[in-house]
Length: 171
Image 1: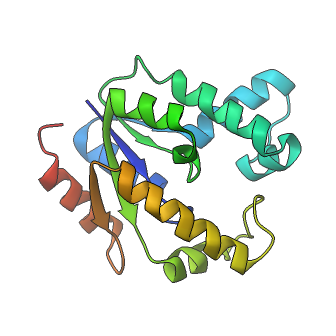
Image 2 (image 1 turned 90 degrees about the vertical axis):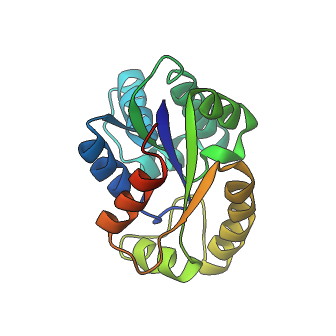
């Protein structure tokens, strides 16, 4: 069975996922990376995920994301990190639930924001207020969708990974 990490941008899905995969001897898959690879195959342009979002617009980006997640259906024995907005699409949720256990990495808005602003605001928002609104909207979806939730505030990646392993040692 796969372990699938969901949560807001900056919650640590990729960092936790890589270490978790390493410790459990599983493959690590990042859906954002899959989208980047598919976009490169389609366009021969190597772009970061935020640039792909800007170039395609939300609707086309979400279609590409849905295609990437649908291709995961044969995947087994992996740790999968999803993009923060993957849960906005019910087809994505249904697909992910069929192939694994969804773990929500819960982190306060302030902590996510302090990580996010070190780079730049995501392509899909224009202000901190808009980001706050998205956080609140998505948090409800993460909570409703997840099979389990791990609070990650003020914890090291190592301790989060150990908590997940302790709770999901049979997965």
